[in-house]
Image (cartoon, rainbow, N blue to C red; front, top):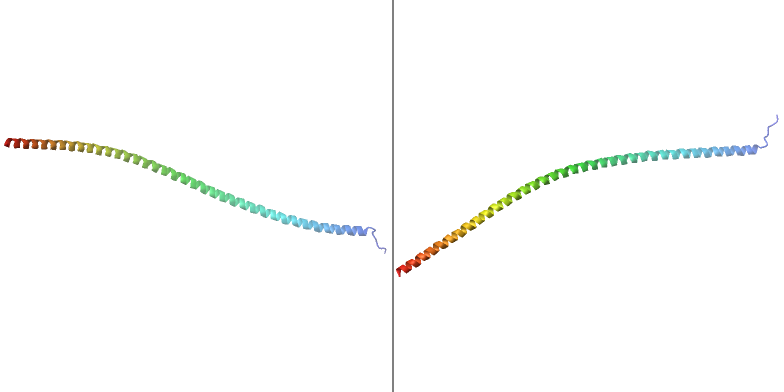
Length: 141
């Protein structure tokens, strides 16, 4: 039996080798693509996790900050009310103090007038006594 001999067999062999190399290159590229795809998915998942953590942290912190701010606003409002109450009490105390000071000054003026009257009466009494003594001395002489 005659043996078939293809004249371009060497070209065919080269083509088969090239095909095998291309398949291996494709397989390597495909594996690289799958690896990179997996890395991308991991990065996406990690990014989503970071975003979730960030949102959670921001939301938590923002909510906490909002709650703190609202609490502080409430505290400030309460303190403003306390300050207003204290201011009213201070004004009432100042009015009371002014009233008491005026009453004291009136009493001091009345005391001064009474003291001046007393000194005047004492001076008159002394004058009468001196006058009486002078008259008595004059009468005896």
